[in-house]
Image (cartoon, rainbow, N blue to C red; front, side):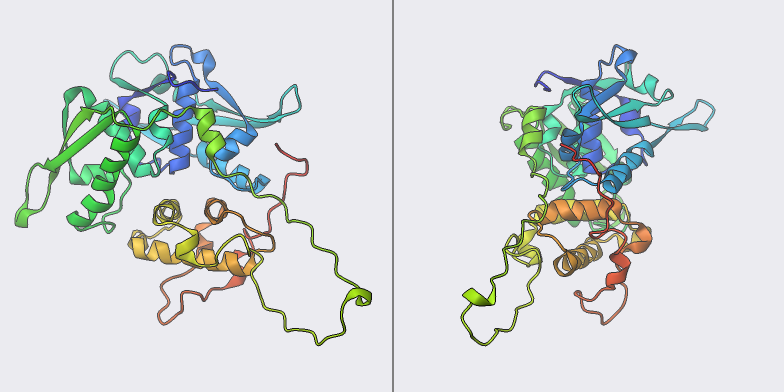
Length: 387
């Protein structure tokens, strides 16, 4: 069990590297990995988890082998490009190996090992690194919140930190056409993260405009960083894991069909076409998925959309709604948690299989069901039960 005093030591260089595009779940898992190693002993580079814990950390619903492979393959593909003194760079992956196995007590486990090239960024850091306690990131609900926390934690000792708007957007992986107006960027990113950090972490911040360009355009942002004591009670890792939604159970057994001997002779009533999801979900997108959950799912979906011009909040939410609609129509088994189900869909879907939202005069409920066969109710299940 992870205790509150578990400390993460993170290299400034690793924290400043752009381009690995980690989702919230992957960033949180990486923080947990850093908390589990002893940063002064390279021999602790391999970290193992019960597979059921990994399942909840990564936000899976019912676990299947394809989903598991897609998730671990994504972790193994996270590349960092470290600048060289001559102006070039060296690229390598953070992790080199994942192993899923049964331990001595026949429990399924997962083990992950850092790549050899990444070791200098993870172990025996002499300077230019910062520390924080794991509990600070467990309650954060978006990748933006976690990234801003780590960015400000790195500069906490200065008390004040100035960064260009362009650099901040790159650090947060926000495309140029997303939140392009500063008021929108402030409301959806800066103000939202400010509230989340004050509620859940040991720092808080205010911000102001720094340098101003033509027509009053914000060129830089100045963050003022303060210690925070009004956060919620620290959460231990096991408490976080236990608080995650339970995996979806198998379909409940169908009731026995009555025979004609005990059924009154009456006219058969027309059968109402009901989704297999009922009565677990309402069948309404806005009711089953909260605004905050939609934001998280859209952020996951944005990494799958190849064209930057199609990563606007409106188009991402429309795609998400199409996936939700298909879930209502095509699911063959009851769904208890729409968010967990859609997370699994997004993790597994290939970019070329994303529903198109560019066709004009097309209703939001219209889609090609055939394109989803690759991921909806067509997973090869692990043959043995995984706890």
